[in-house]
Length: 334
Image 1 (tube, one colour):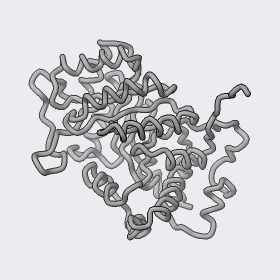
Image 2: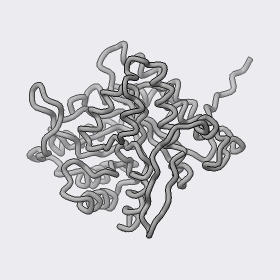
Image 3: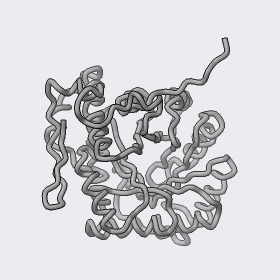
């Protein structure tokens, strides 16, 4: 299992090395971390889940089923993303409204600054509030790509719009007493001029009134732990929640990583090589790799986890089980 050590105050993390002891460690029989099995069904870990808005009625039904499957895990919240450039705004609002009515768990709505004036963004925030949504994931957002290209390019504020996520947070605070989550980047935002500038931007968002930060996904625990240390040294005291992406599609994960600047270690590329054609084996490897990451973070005191579900319930359910968080089923009268 990966080990995190400190040398002259700097964290280093040994790479993931699968071996005979992996199964025992993932089943909570190894030396890493406390035994959570005696702490009740929720253990001492809290989770949240992120979905993307469905494009079709069939996908909408699948999302509804995924939300129902995950609801017994009692997440702190579930959320629905915006597409690049606000391209899925209406579908996001519709999916969020359905979840707020039917999911039985707190729902957070995503909101970005892209391609919208302040008045338009504020109207969406008020619509969320009217739906019963009391939590917003406030993001600057990425500009849409040119025709035939992936989203990307440098952000340019819309005339009359919010300049950045910190300004959006301040605006939301004037509309309603929302709980507000913002984004953090353990490996720096692709547009950041330096690691310090990126950290300063995070602090500005939290100082503007955000409740917590949720990180972009990463694949090695040391990446998050070093970032957490730097944030603490910068005076950031707000909760920083690691974002975990279980790999459902290898090429898709590589595309996501390239767009957001996430490093994919060589050992991981080798481990997943050729597995897109072997979905059952890939699912097992995904759970082992993501479970290893989560358990190492847990051993370092992390108790909050945010899962990028890609609208699939099984990987996140498995990871929650490995962390000691079990479904809580309501009693049904005979």
